[in-house]
Image (cartoon, rainbow, N blue to C red; front, top):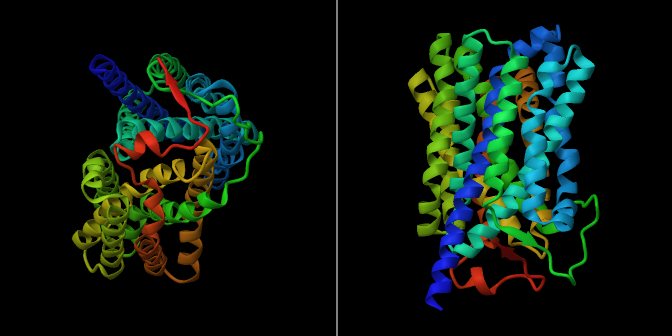
Length: 405
């Protein structure tokens, strides 16, 4: 009936806004933490090498914990699971500033990463199902909201650092505020519950085969993303001899183009479909990599990093969407893709540095360019993420998940 359709449409609209807000809260945690890393390093009396070791632990925690998320989601339902996991993530923001030495910081960052990864899996699963029920692309915009949240969080952290506020106070206050915001936002997301006849996934589930192929495409994008974020400024400084200010602008160019592209990406996906969008994205990323490698001046390199940002921006959201529709257990498939992409983000900076030590940074970004070509070649596997208003309602797994108000 018309009235019921209007009510359903209104509920889905609220659900979309709620999950978008959840993505922003998740990103804000990262933004706040990143700005206080120097304070944490000084507080724990760490060398640069020790800090590098500690900063590997969030990714390790995520990789270990993400496969568990599907089981938790199945047992408690998506809304309760997200509310609990997001609260663990926001509260964990306070932990790193409390660590007095390397060992305790590694433990704190492991918990920090584990809670981040589990919340990441559940909120992406909810995002995919919300997209299914709306019958149009929203995943790119959701990840754009994550980037926007990270930017707002980093702005807040920058102000706190500029005011020389003790990071234990700053991060504790931020954790409290974000926990309240997160709990409020979670109340509006779809509450997806497994059908009674559906068997629960294993408590620790390995990625399904379908997720492995999709994850490899995400790996190419995240590798290029991690390499560009961590090494673009170094590239301009060491290879092209630019000033620190110009070198830093390369990171800004990459980050801003990626965020803007994600926010605008859903309209592009709606018009051209996920496969064509991913393929064109791969071409742009490849062109950006080539410009970086052959750059003879900073302007050329900045343009290259900007194109890399545009090229990789929507690929990971499309990979999550494809994984969520690739089998009967969206959370498990998304966890598999997330595990692969997080691992890629973990190894990318060190891999670039190793190749640079053996050869040069230019050769390292030649490797990034080759992986960008992989986006063009592998775009077809994202067809699992295509949808229509009809398929969003009718082509669901037999174990249907129904949202409750």
